[in-house]
Length: 477
Ligand SMILES: C[S@@+](CC[C@H](N)C(=O)[O-])C[C@H]1O[C@@H](n2cnc3c(N)ncnc32)[C@H](O)[C@@H]1O
Image 1 (cartoon, rainbow, N blue to C red):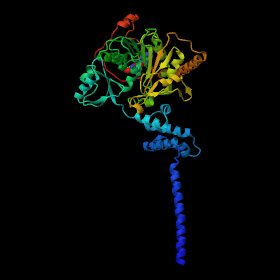
Image 2: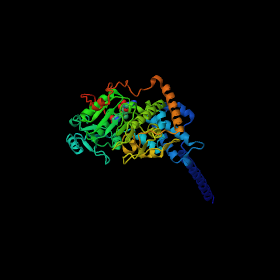
Image 3: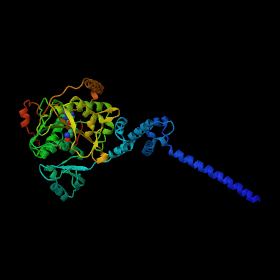
Image 4: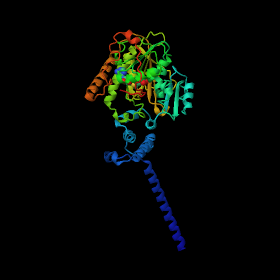
């Protein structure tokens, strides 16, 4: 019948339309799944034309593509194009200059890099270190709880740290604080001292010590025996150092104000040396967000040069024949490879009379043994890295050396040449820096102990200053 024929034709038409619709739908899904990188023109328009939400969405899309590149990449695009765009976008989103963003990005797999940048946006917990020269952690905790402070032990790895959750009173002005029962000190800043592990009656040099968080911890571990030389090249910062030493009742401590490079010519033969080196501060960005934009290539070359000079002085200042020690700890609150593994590797080459030993810290990520085409000595894996996103503490690096001989064997010829080339590069960079160069020693190194040519005078000198400004911040220059 006519009516049946028309109905059959209509069914066929509907089926065709349905098929077409399905195809269209599939195409739309496929279009949505192939993320398209912005064109050159779009990029040139710059960030003004984009809001943060657009950038964030693109970051998420690029991460998704990079995590499944073969399937999701746009035809004809390389991985590095996506990575370059991601670095630009992360820089815009989190407010870093592109130079630093790129440097930090390459430390991690893509998703972990984003965790690191996110963690830098969040403040780390407030932590205090019990001063065992004056009290016990249990008693301090009780005294602070009685004042309404909400706290708990910082973690199993420390017997002296307390994490403060909230407090109705300023934690830097309680009677216990003023009496020197504790130091406000980031958890990561305990680590180099734990690694140094000073033993009673030893002579210890803290080469870059102001404002004294680590000096006062060393003094406490020595139980006020032996002697700690607390040196810092910055005279102003020595005031806060002295105030802390005085407040915490450290009676075995001598403050001195020299360029660390003057050791060991000035005084040597230490049982242990801590070099908590001046650094870029890329581990403490949550505390000092200015680091995101104020660092350039020249700064890193300049810092690496000082760090290398200081680490050799630190090594040369230790007595390999010390009955109890012979150790050097190198630390920074930076996460860049050129300030950490590269410095340690340089020290191993220049001073074959030291070797790396386990840090003595039972957590932390292994140091890199290779990084972006550079390889380091395999033992560099014994050094330890700390990140805000993995341990909820500031970024930090710790390396522990043991000195095996006081004689420095000659470095092989080609290694010397390599170093000379590197030094030349550094010189060129320092020249380029010209007048804008930030001096590491902000003032001329006119020492508090300036006229103390006699080592005995330094040994006997205990400098305590009352009423000095206190500061716990760990500045870099
Ligand atoms: C990371 S901070 C030290 C923090 C300190 N260890 C603490 O725990 O409180 C680095 C210090 O190195 C000092 N410094 C910079 N260049 C120096 C040098 N050439 N010799 C000695 N100290 C130096 C800076 O003044 C700064 O106080």
